[in-house]
Image (cartoon, rainbow, N blue to C red; front, side, top):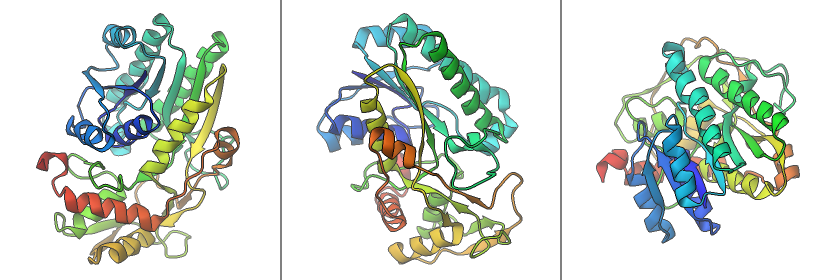
Length: 336
């Protein structure tokens, strides 16, 4: 039995789908602060499998401990956390409490229940400003915002935990930029309020929910002046968790990037989305945002070498799948 924290979220629902498809039993935990149980109902209908759901918060150590014991959990995939960079600058204590303290209590409950296999959702934000590209796992860690620092501190905590108790099996996965949706169009990203990420915003412009996209800076030293990022299809990302989990056969700690190894500019994403949707994406150019870098993309070779994972889906497929989700669910899960 796999415990999946943040199981009703965007990435969580896709990881849940991957786990079920691979034959795992899953118990999902979520506090529903930024997600909907409807995602798991969709997962159940797609997979034909049942998912046990517990409405709980990872900061409640006793609740997590009881779930671990009651469900016979053997491993944890930990996705629960707050993830908006801008919000973390405004409410840093909330981010430290949820992401760092919450993970500490989750791991404490795991230790008490003698569950010592963990896949942790980290982020490429731990790298900060790139000093070289592509970013490999040896790059210095210098996060530039509270969100990135919470991921960094959790990584350090897990490393210290493994040093002190080397019977743990831990995989730390540093995500780059998850986009897209399940090919069925039934599960996808459902942001509340104004989207923080590029593709949901582009999709909402395409469908007419928003007037235009603002591109933050077009004077970077890139081919078209806009920032370049490593976008990864969420289904590829989900398969990375499955591969990492399968790798945890022996005690150890592994840190690996999950990215495609190449970048796409903001304008390239816009043009690709226009091509797959047949819709025009009006945009305006705004000033550069503080802290944004010109180019950021992963070196994903370690994940391929250590647990046989590689991203396979193209930017065109990412945009097409996201557009299918947007068309079928113009109001997200709230429209069902």
